[in-house]
Image (cartoon, rainbow, N blue to C red; front, side, top):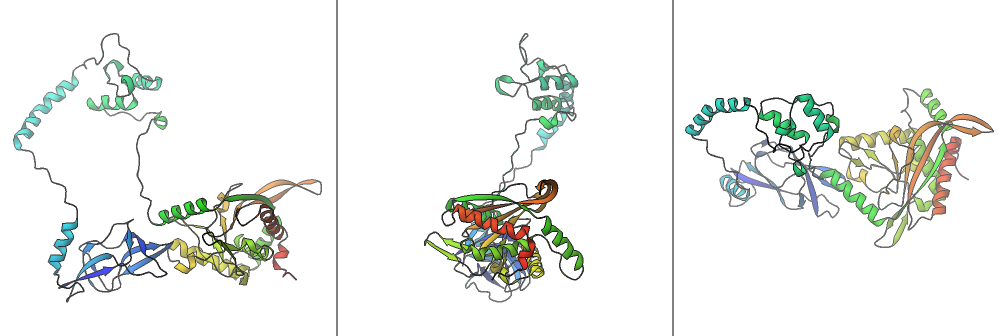
Amino acid sequence: MGVHIIKMPDIGEGIAQVELVAWHVKPGDSVAEDQVLADVMTDKATVEIPSPVAGTVTALGGEVGQQMPVGAELIRLEVEGAGNLKGATPAAATAAAASAAPPAPAVAAPPRAEPVALAREAAPAARTAARRPPEPTRAPGDKPIASPAVRRRAWELGIELQYVHGGGPAGRIRQEDLDVYLAARGQVAPLRASAAYAERTDEEAIPVIGLRRKIAQKMQEAKRRIPHFTYVEECDVTELEALRGKLNERHAGQRPKLTLLPFIARALVLAVRDFPQMNARYDDDGGVVTRSGAVHLGIATQTEPGLMVPVLRHAETLDLWSCATALTRLADAARSGKAAREELSGSTITITSLGPLGGIVTTPVINHPEVAIVGINRIVARPVIREGAVVARQMMNLSCSFDHRVVDGMHAAQFVQAVRALLETPALLFVEPA
């Protein structure tokens, strides 16, 4: 038998360290060749680390949430044969790993029989004492300090506050002091009608690891580096929604169902031809703005672990249904954790939408190092004046943020107005410019 050490592999692209986000095995488990041992995260891509050999886990090299450099020891296995750790036996390797582990907490010796017997003998006496009338905790004439809510509950429970110890400031009697008083007498406090207003002191510490840590770092970097400004414009999508409904009805069962996103994507493809400064990435360290001819759309997607931005590459080449198919595939890959690394990077402009929860106005955060993001708010029926008459129209706001270092306010407004014109007259989405 030998010891086989698996080190953190080189994921590529110059990555020096990764975050350990999940273990799929524990010490003592038997693993097969190619079985997944752990998940690590780099950027926003989760990578599975398989085992190159079969064996038994003897030690883990890190904890979930730990940043591990490439080449660090990830896991130790006991294997048939010599293994890859020279001059070490499994027993010695296990002992070395155990010596590095923190000492186990001492186990208290069981109590001797005599104190237990005495406690059992004293129990009836304690119960008898509990039934005696309580002794006053205050001098005669001292008024207990308590809120009206506490006094009302004490009255409902038949408790004289004179006998209740106050654990609050200046001896104030709190709701929990009533609970302690009842528990000391073997009574259970009934559920209070005012429980919804009871003071709470509980806390929960949640480690920020994995995707949540990456999101936090990304948002902090974007807000630290980019001077955002947001421009909001309303858009009448009545005609667009009518067209979308007719297309879905006509091609039901034959083509993918169209949502609003393929139309938004097509509008952006056309609009950035006249405003190429929006479809760009800004290297603020090098002081260079790179305008892209290709439109690589980032699609902000909510997943169970957190927000991810899969990339719809070369959106300029896709018709509505091809775009709908690609968007569905990317969203499914992101939510299932199967999106490849190249599908989560390289976007040139981003769309973000909360669908029916989109609100009236948002101030979206730019996906650094891009310079623009288009936010879609929810569609609502609102009264609008058209040709002197008040009519109901399907209205939607566009909330778009820009990097003010490279995008001027006037150009941002013109860009949003161009997108608005395309969406309000959807026939223009299918007319190629001269």
